[in-house]
Amino acid sequence: MACIKVNIPGYGDCDGEAAIVILGPNGVGKTKLAQRMAQSGQVSAISAQRRTWVNVSLPVEEERQLKSFVQQQQNQWRQNSWQPTEEINHILSELIQDHSNILTKNNEQAIEANTSCEPVRDTKLILLQVLWSKLFPKRKLEIGGFFPKVTRLDTVSAAPAYQLREMSDGERTVLYMAARVLTAELPLILVDEPELHMHCRLAVQFWDEAEKLRPDCRFVYITHDLNFALSRRGATYLVARSSDRAEPLVVDNLPLSIAGEVLGAATLPFYAKRIFFFEGEPGNGFANEFFSVWFDDHETFPIPSGSRDAVCEAVSGLKKVGIVAADVMGLIDRDFYSDEYLSKVSDGIIVLELHEIESILCDPEVAKSLAAHLGMNPDETWDAFVKRVREEYDGQKKSAVVASRVRARVGNLLEGAFCRAQIDADLAQTANRHVNALSQLDIPTRAAALFAEESGRVSKALAEGGTAMLAILPGKQLLSILAQVLKLNNASALTSMVVKSLDRKHLRKDDTLSALGLKIEAALLEYLPARHT
Image (tube, rainbow, N blue to C red; front, side, top):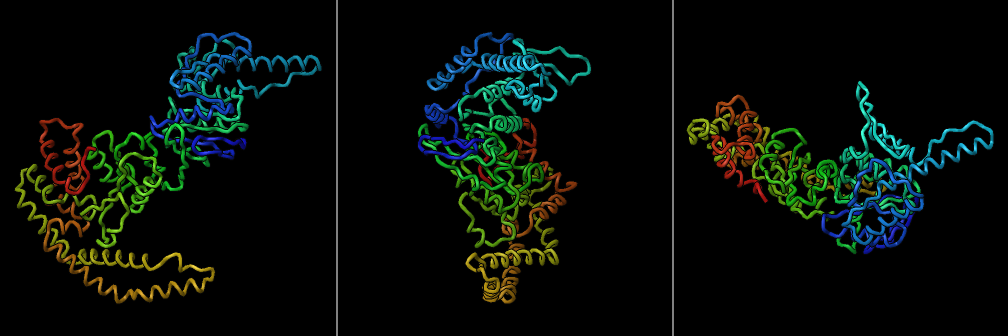
């Protein structure tokens, strides 16, 4: 792109050649901000309110009349952005006339020079058709005359061509946008809602190609679609705070987990009331299945973010960015970490009171409700479960839990012992500082004490049973034991039953699982955020 200075109200001059992306929720004043930018007289603006209806035949007028009409539409947008612009027919006619004039001139020069006519490959109309073929390879755009049409190339028998008015919204939008970009005569091309009426992938591909077509221009995008915004690599990002103020947005604060998962949903951060991060991989595992039904309103968005650290980064990242009006929160498993370590998590992070998300299904009330639903005695089932757990964790499994807890605490000690100040340009000095820090920790002595401490903690939890036991022992293993006690085939049968019971969108009120779901919900609200905002 060309290096062009842009003055942005409330922000100042923005030098450079990279695209500028101005983000903001609906109603904040993005379009009015764009109108003020256009007052400089250096902006070719493409309105969000645009009619893309193409007539059967295009207007036959002189070039100056065509351009005058387009300019009138531009002026109209500067005054009344709510009023749709409708210049598409005039722009297409301008492209055709430009194409015809160049071919005629080329032919005349060949006749005068008495030479063969070299083919013309770079008229604006040809460039538009080349772009079209990249995006719609199975559709041939035929607009060389004043009766444009589209021919299908993906049928075995010859299919009749269809008129441009019969195009899909996406096709018409691509045609209109490409024509507007190619005919823009000013150095700045400002596009309000560039993703409108286009599939997210099509929008990204189209604007990638459009920017290549006009390296002499700088692009400014006004959008509330953060997914599209992040597709503009190397762009300058701003957040519209009002119609007369924009602030810089540092997207480097956004972890990859956010960019890849959270912002993958167009406009998500602006109409959500809650964004909920949790440990897990997209499309896999119990957590995904569970939270997709636990939050069953349209204003809460559960997002799997991978590891515990990724959840923390996602929450802190979105809070730092400051463009999300929703309540941003994350849930992490207690796992083998100590209370002291977990107490230091960042704002917005909820630490599950139990070992991991599977553990909540082993809650006493949940287990008893499942037993009653299956025709078993609730109290006897719970007692049998606790007894089986104690038997399972009376040897090597108990030692494994104690060792895991000790390793987690030793890891915390090591993490706290090292810091950037210990790193020096002199490698020997750096090594000495690390060795001294390790010596001060006295890991062997402290490890022995930690084993004794954690052994007592695990033994006490087993003796107490209940939630104390669920906080210490791995939930996945406990879930398998509970499934056996409930006489189910496996843990998957248990989780499936719970998820179905909570799926209020698909359960009939007279379904027995509905009553089970109400009991489970009441128990799980002790650990999880409410299902509705």
